[in-house]
Each structure stands twice: as C-alpha cells, then as structure tokens.
Amino acid sequence: MSFEGILGQERAVARLRKALKSDRLSHAYLFYGPNGTGKKLAALQFTKGLYCTAATADACDACTTCRKIASRNHPDVLLIEPEGASIRIEAIRMIQNRLSYKPYESQRTTIIIDGCELLTLPAAHALLKTLEEPPGNALLLLLAGRKEALPLTIISRCQLLPFQPLAPQHIASILSQRGVDAGTAGAAASLVEGSLDAFAETEPAQILAKRQAAYTLLSDALDVKDPSLFSKARQFAGKREQCEELLRWLELLCRDMVVLKVAPAAPLYNQDMRVELNELAHPLTHERLLDTCDLIEQLRHYLAMNVNPQLVFERLLVHLQQTLSGAVAARPA
Ligand SMILES: [Zn+2]
Image 1 (cartoon, rainbow, N blue to C red):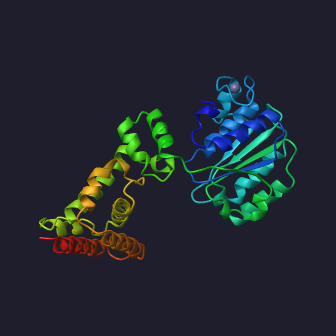
Image 2: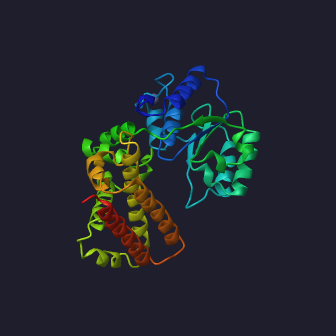
Image 3: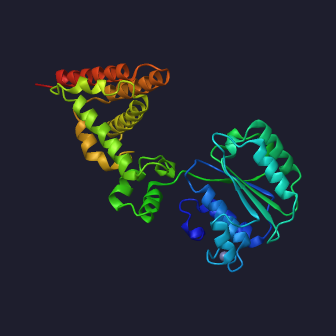
C-alpha cells in the first residue's frame, strides 16, 4: 500500500508527502482527529516513506526496510500503544532510554505513540521533557483522538496534522476492500459517523442486523394490534448493555424520521431505509417524533443512572403506543 491507499485524508497526506520530499522534518508531529480515520496507517506509511530504500516521497512496500516496519520488526521504529486505558510513565521512560542510544540500522529513531489522549499526567510531563529537548536523530509521531485532551505545552511543540471523519463512500470502499459485499458495505458505511472503529470488533452485517432488530421493534411498537409487545420489555430485564444499544439505534431511526418530515431530501444515517422509514413516519407528526427522540435521550440517561432496563423499556413502549393512538385519533375520517 502507498499513500494512495489512505482514503479521505487528502490534506494530511499532501503535507506528509511534502515533508518527505523536502526532507526537512520537524522533531514531532501530532496527528489528531476521530479514531478509526487512518491516523496510525498514515503514521506507519510516513515512517516507511522516510526509511524506504527504493521509493522517494512514498514507500515501495517491497524492500526489506518497508517490510520490517510493516511487521513492527524494525529496530529503529517503535510503536507505543495504550495498555488498558492509559499510557503510563514507564512507557515514556522506555522511550527516553531508547532515544539515549544511536539508531541501529538507520539515521533516525522514530517513536509512534498511539492514543496520546490516554497519557497519564506524569507520563505527559515526562513526554514534554523529551519534546523540549529531543535528540537530533529522534522523530516523534503522536496520535490522538482528541487534541483537547493533551496539555497545550505538548501541542505547541508539534506540527499539527488534522484528520477528518471519513465520508461514507470512503468507508464503503475500505469495507469492500476487506471483502464485504457492496450492499452491506454501503448500508453500514453511513451508520458509523465517519469512523471505522465500529468495525474493529463487529462485522458490518452484525451492525445491520442490530439496526434491523431496532427497526422491527419500532414498527411493532407502532402497531397497536400487537399484543405480545409488553412481553418484549421483560426480555431486557438485567440486560443494560443491550438495552442501551437498542435505544441508540431507535434514536437514530427516529432522528431520520424527523429529517424525512422537515427536510425530505437531506441525507440520512439510515440512507438505505429511506422508503421504509418514510412509510413508518407517514401517520406521525414531526412534533411527536421529536418528543420520541427526546424521550429516548432521557431514557438513555436514566439507564446510565442505573434505572432498571425493563422499566426503561416499558416507559418507551407506552410512549410509542400513545404516539400512534394520538396519530390515529388525529387522522381525518
Ligand atoms: Zn521500501
């Protein structure tokens, strides 16, 4: 893969290419922006570009050096990642120790630190010392999901490279490259708010199945004739995580239904379900749908405050049924 393979980050990639061409590098760069948008990929590609013995301003991906970096076996390139929920001072001390030696196989030692927003305070202070007086042959690539989580003193010592949320078409092509069929890739791509992180542990097809379950529940709940509905609430007794996930999907579906009422041509999260959602929203007013969105948000808050999931769910079902009976009553004869 070359820089061409990093989709949706044209500006960041152009600046990295320019830095490689000019060979005038800063000691430190901060790649920041939502996780799952290609920061680590870009940092590794940039590093390969620096060390590659065959290509200029990019990497050949075939030479021994490129392959060593790709397999994390290059002695002069270190990738530090959070251990659990933090990056501790021991990791920074290890880096400082490593930088006190000369590079083994090249002219430079590159340290990539992923998840910099998770540096503990002592670790951040220690890192600042290294940034203030970096050894001449050191390059630090800091990657952070949120720049604001880092001390200003660190930010001010880095060249800043912003990464953008990925457009759905870029996410869809990345999923297709991973072997996901085009229909699933396209539908799942608009659901993940510009980040590939959602697919780290869940397959796109599973994500669509969860969304489908929420849609089925919503359409059943809006059907007053369904007598089995309240037994469904009991299924959620004690299942806080599933209940939270389902509420999140229901909220996205309801938000899209509001959008269909007020700006029918605007893009939707659930772009592939436009027809179904339009039909479901048809008898309802946008005020009632907005009320539903507000209630779901409130219920998610209650759930986070440890309210029983079954009660949360019953409250939602009562609201949905009242919403529909109101709509039926308001319908002209
Ligand atoms: Zn190479």
